[in-house]
Length: 517
Ligand SMILES: NC(=O)C1=CN([C@@H]2O[C@H](COP(=O)(O)OP(=O)(O)OC[C@H]3O[C@@H](n4cnc5c(N)ncnc54)[C@H](OP(=O)(O)O)[C@@H]3O)[C@@H](O)[C@H]2O)[C@@H](O)CC1
Ligand SMILES: [K+]
Image 1 (tube, rainbow, N blue to C red):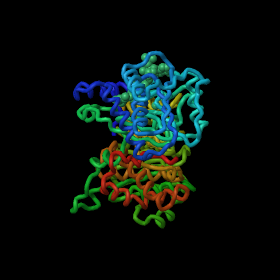
Image 2: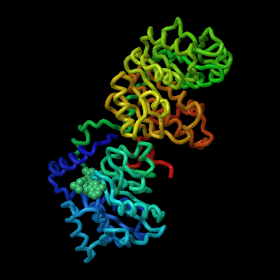
Image 3: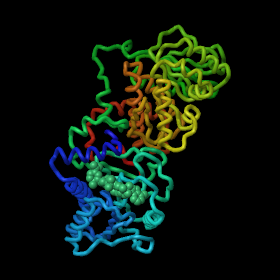
Image 4: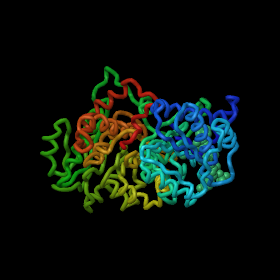
């Protein structure tokens, strides 16, 4: 699913009215009606007090349309205008008149804290104060209103975006943002729903289709995409019934150190379970028995050193090499990595201490083959690209780093984001159960295994991140968040692959994107 920019949203709006021969007020009517239908389906006429807070722009206009429909359907509604500016939008004013014609009274005007109404815990708040048009800090009294929403503990439904969130930057003050229980977003989800600093402001979200022009939706290129089943299905390579293991490549996993051989076992098993033909693990001597005993499908090459990788030298011709899991940053390992990189032309996936070594020795970066995949967690990313001031700055720095070194970066997190050049691929699968030892090693193995099967590095990364999360989503049904461990994620890969061909999820459902409340 595409994530449109602010400019693209306004452009889509304009094109739709032109091409469908409708007025912008009609589009607003559709938007408000969609929200009404969503609420009506769930509330079935229940007489719960609903407080609809409207701004003075088009987000407020949506709120007025909704309030009118709710009133006409017999709900108990109070409508407020949060009068933060006198510059009212044209479509707001049209709907301001329309609601007056229905209620024979103007909505309640709010201009300061004295105007705040009582809101009981069992009431419903509709937040139509600011939409995507927010472009400067929210006035203090409006921030106080948002705090008033929060302290009421009432269910808060935000229209399009929780008010106070910008589309393209991190807000100045956390207290100036509505804490939405649910957000109904038009046309596409917003990037801020996926970033660590702002994701917390909506517990769940859903996209409502307001019928924007189909050609615009299909042909507009966006620089951010959400990766769900529909996006990965075209990537999937079906198996030829006459294929044999030689067709799916040979992965070499280099890593491990005394006490951290398990990381290599996990990555190697994950590579094989993701479908590669052969796996060889390259480890210090101390891990030989553990690896052979726990993972008999692997072949093993040992370093001359007992406890560390000190030389990366082999006679085989792998199709892809993973480096770094459990490897440590011993000075002999650093020099082994440098020598290896100087001679290597095979595609690489680098994780964990491999990334830490690159971060401290940035001259090694120019030795990487094109489209090397790096899978840092946030701390490793910071070491690699430097500190960032906020999430948007982080993404800009990651893009610049990716372009400069021609690498694919996976920013691991609740919504892992693959960055390549200017593009962001935001993963929709995964759950808090993945915050557990070894889950990163498993991801490294999957991506490596997919590259060895002939997926290009970017497709392998995007698909690998998706499968990793999907496998955890299926496994968590059996283990719960607390008991899920990295090995389970490997065991459930099969189910994750099979899930690709289950009945496709309906677009409205979006269950992959709903967070735990
Ligand atoms: N295609 C779609 O998706 C559709 C979208 N629709 C809806 O339109 C919404 C966008 O509406 P919008 O452009 O009128 O902006 P909105 O957020 O209502 O803000 C209003 C104005 O407030 C101002 N302002 C900004 N910051 C401020 C501040 N801190 N304090 C005070 N004032 C501030 C700023 O005006 P300015 O003063 O800068 O000229 C801004 O324009 C969108 O989210 C969706 O709900 C649907 O109706 C139909 C189809
Ligand atoms: K809003």
